Length: 134
Image (cartoon, rainbow, N blue to C red; front, side, top):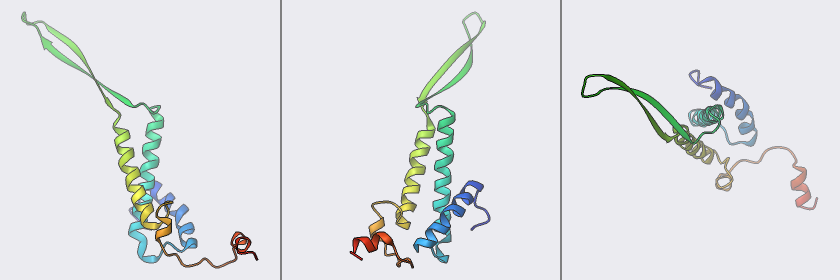
């Protein structure tokens, strides 16, 4: 595990690495790519938490106050409200695309699973035996 991995990505590493190793889809040379997958997963989690904290608001408001002077030199304060799409949704989309990419590289998405060749896992699978009529 890279030492500079952020804490949430380290937690993902500790959770996923044993699973990926058991399935035979993680090797010693996959560290950098696996760290990217863990970082992408951590980013998605953080953004989802931020969206939950703002109650999944789609619109974000930015309020600013401007000081304007009229013709007689009197100063007036004018409130300006700018409404825009919550930037967290754009960040979420990018983070999910990044996570999807890395899941595809490791064969952990439904569409990419059939594209990888994984060595067989040792042990007897009762479901496989059942399907083969044993």
